[in-house]
Each structure stands twice: as structure tokens, then as C-alpha cells.
Length: 418
Ligand code: NIG
Ligand code: FE
Image 1: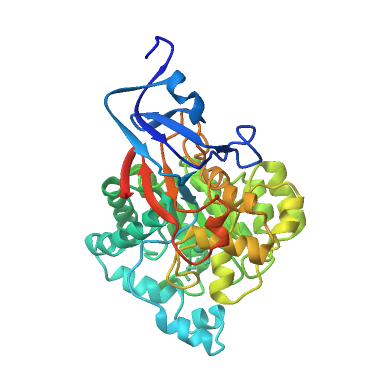
Image 2 (image 1 turned 60 degrees about the horizontal axis):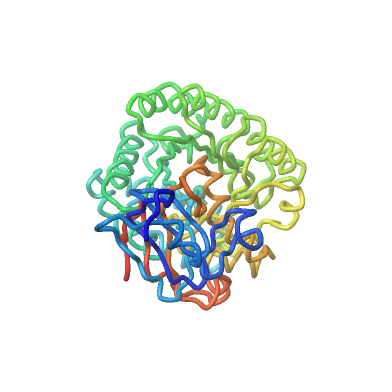
């Protein structure tokens, strides 16, 4: 029986063992768990979330609408990856081998490897080639539950090559089920042509690259690798402020290897997020909290480089919002599985399972300024969800190193699995 007051939907997800909304105050606990929950969507957006027992009375499926049988699986919001370098050419497998023999990431970079070796390969690739290389990576991300990602430029480091990377990202976003949001990271490294002339390169980024990126609407964010020997706090400030004048939202690589004041800068410019923070000062993180900046921690990088993890518990004590991202890139974190990132956060950084899940969903959405769109299952948000074959949502992190995602819905459509 339909009644005039029921909501119309064209997709109903039912028979879930648990529906984890990641909405505080909805369902149980900080992750908003609804046991035997159901969800309804219309077009690309969620219109209803609640216990299955209320579904029939409150929602009507339109003729031709689809019922998706969760078959006792656990439904979670699609994961959000707020920090990736997924567009690149070449491989750095040889550096991985060198590091196993004791070389550090910085030593490899100083010897001409590192980011600059990827720059060389990326400069030699066309837009088509870059997109073709990134497509299967996006497929893997989707298969592991990521439905929204950020993607940085920063392996071009000339105006033409940065625009080429951003054009590849634009194309990938248009073609692929996953939403890919571009981050202009022209200040990812000082290119060899500008060695010893970092200020001149900053001029190029601010005066030539940035206006073109903005004019062509190729990026939503701007990013800087604020690090000793790369871009100073003053240079980073200049770039982020110039980006803001062009309407780009600031994110930054902050205090990854050295305590430089990146966290403080993020607070000062009210960045969406400061990322890495392995060596950030607690005072700086407290300033981020006061300014509403999200701390995006990237445990995959510490794991892959064999470095100590960020002191997540100390950060959490300041009350700062903590997101978790993959940092997917060929040098410091060749991985894109956010389920495994959750495990690292819990086992290595002592985050709770709830904090880890919020880190790859709602808090990651905050790190991208997309908290009104994605990151939780709530009416009005995009219908981006994953179905996991686990007895309860905690098993997604607890049973590690395997893929628990068996089906992915993006913008109301089943885009992966069955
Ligand atoms: O986030 N720190 C700078 N950027 C990347 C590394 C990129 C690379 O090594 O290619 C990072 O770790
Ligand atoms: Fe990075």
C-alpha cells in the first residue's frame, strides 16, 4: 500500500545486517550503526535511511525502480581518499629495493631519484598515456571501496606539463565512475631547471601556472610540499594565498620529515587540511583544531617508508578532526587500499575502529570540503555506498590485507561487483 506521505525512490537497499551511516547522533555510537538498516535513493541522492522495519511504511519504490538485496552484508558509505598522486608515469620499484638496502627517501631524492624520476617519466607521457595509466588504478580504488578521490598534479613542474596532468585528471573524472577532484600541486618539488632558484620557480607557479589552471577551471584545490629543502613556510604561504585569490582551496603537505611550521601555516591560511604531520608540533595541531583544519594522516607512507607513525592519539587529544588517506604515489606509498589504511591506523597509531572508519569517510570528506556531499549515508547526500561481506563492520579493518568489498554503488548506480 502506498500513501501520499511516503517518499518516492528508484533504488532501495534492503536486507543489510548493518547499515553504518557515519552520521553522529543517528543510530548507535559515533559511527551511527543501524542494525538491519535500509536505505532509499532517488536519482543520485539518498532520500531515506532507517531501520528496515520502517521502510515499507515510509518509502515507495517507483515503477521500474530497483531493489538491491544486500543479502546480509554490511553497508558502509563509499570511502573518500583525500590525498593521492594517482596520475604518474614510470615506476620506482628500484627505489623500493634500494630502501630495503638502507637508503632513505631523502637520500634517493638528493641523488636525482625520488619525485624527479617520476617527473621525467611524466613529462615524456601524453595526456592519453597518463589517463590510460591511471584508469586501472581508479578501477582498483573503486573495487576496494573508494568512491570519491582527490588527485594531485605535481609531476610535471612546467606550465604545460602541469596542465597536461590536470587535463588527464579532468578526463578521468568525466569518464570514470569514481569522482576525481583535482588538486594543483605545481609546488610539489623544485624542477632541475630551477635548482638553487626556488623563489624563481615559486614566481612561475604563482604568476604563470596558477592563472592558467584557474582560467581553465582545472582544479578545486591548491597544494604545496612545505618541507625542508623543498618549499619554505614563507614560499608555501605565498602560493596558498595566491591560490585562494583564484578561488582554489588550500591543502598542504606539512611537517612530513622536519618540524617546519606547516601545521601552523595550515591554521593561518585556514586550509581544508594539513597532511602527513609526522613531525608536526602539538601546538601547531592545536591551532589547526581552533581554525577548523582537518589533520589528514597517511599511515601508508610511514608503513611503506618504514618511518614512525604520526602520533594520532596526541593529535586526537587536541580535538582536531583526523582524516586518513592513502597518499597513493609511486615513491612513498604505492597503495590505494583504504581498508588496509584503517588497519594501520588502529594497529599502529592506536586509533579506535570508529575513528578509523570516520577517518576514511566523513572526516575525509571534510578534508576535501565535501562533507555536504559525501562521507556519510544521510538524506541529501550522494548515494555512494559499499557492500562488505563481513559479519560486522569492524571486520573491514580487523581482517586485514584482503578486499571485503563485494559491491559498489556510486551516485545511485551499481558500478562494481554483484
Ligand atoms: O606525499 N611528499 C611529497 N609527495 C609525496 C611523495 C611523492 C613521491 O615520492 O613521488 C608524498 O609522500
Ligand atoms: Fe602526497
